[in-house]
Length: 622
Image (cartoon, rainbow, N blue to C red; front, top):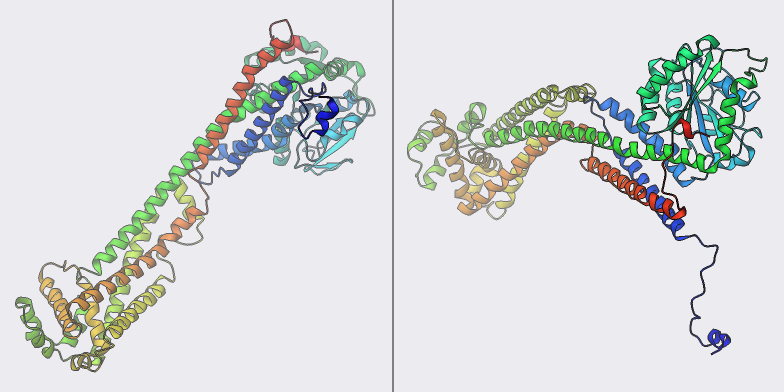
């Protein structure tokens, strides 16, 4: 069959050869690996952002700062850089106050592109100098996305001044950062942020300040993450060069930076334009130019710093996860303490409202007025088997007496609930005050959590009256068909309602001692009255329903008080799943990093007959 037949037969033509311009298998694998790593790092950033460390636990402030720093580095440098590996190398010039950073940058470029600070602290935007052809790499969506791009000098530290200069070699950009030890916190924070976004840190110090502690703290962090660092010893008296460089080299070696290039700029005249003599910075300029011209060397620096940053981020994530676990545990303990205090109050109120405790004092006196005193109750203490009609016929209660019982019940219940609400608040506050985190939460709560709420008494009164109204409705509904009977009419809805309340209050018959007979007899008498009207089964049902509604009402009241504590914990937004989410994200990053490291020697070996070689250190600098 001819090719034309193949095209018109309705069948798909045979497979066409793959275009020669397509990516090689190794390139595709590398692209897939980069995409996977970017995805993993985005998830790591999300997990870190979710991690809240609101409680003032030991070390929490340090881990909060670490978390914020890590999120910034992921957003400012690691993720954008991984997505644009071909972008120019960014050398950030950083160092101490008065080290001469801006003067060095101007001298390297050969013209005044950044203004040295005369007064300290100097507040201005960082300045990034790049070749005009590289402008596309420094847009808002690339490096340091939070900084506004401007083309003019400004005092806004939230802006990044972009200066195109044909003097700069393509593939290299230099950024003048604020002082790392500035007295202005905003300057220090921005300097740290910029250094964390550097492919190469050009650390500038002076003969007078090279041993200061703050710069070495930054250098230690750079060494920990294997960042590419070059040292510029500026403003050095010629006669002191050998002594200082020898000492500085020993300091670098002892701190894991022995392979970092070291350049010396001797003390000398500065021109009217604020530039050092060209010969003073020639060595640095040539080194940077060689680095810019050598794509492989430039890529090696980028990869070294990027790999070190990713490795360090994954490692540091576990420390933040440990701190998050401590937060989760602390919140859990505080919640348990508050719940325990109020659970005890709910139990105590439930027991006291069912064991006859309320059938004392005013409630008992008013009940006795209603049912009559003397022979009736004394006989009930020993002869509870009286027939129902004899009991009923002995009661001569009047409507106003039933109302007095209702008022006494209301007062007794309110006092009981308030007493236990106050006790629960005191217990919860005492347990929280035993920890530093709990003390701060109590301090910032906006109210005195050691006492019941200001409106608690009013809410308790309303809840008790609502319950009494429910009891009245239950009796009225149950007696709908009995309203014309003599017994129902004899006691009325109010009388039968107070009898039901009395039965509920001796639900467990748990009183002991001298009051057992009185409370028990009172409850039995109330039950006999109800049974005379409604029957045994109906009375049991009524009592159980009334009891359940009372328990629910009391629980709702105390739960509302409990929520003053638990809602405070909820506002912290500490999720128990967050620590493991961070650890899992860090493990994924490490897995991909290890896989990439195993793959690199194979790729290198396939590209050359020579075995793979690891380069680095001062001797390998261009």
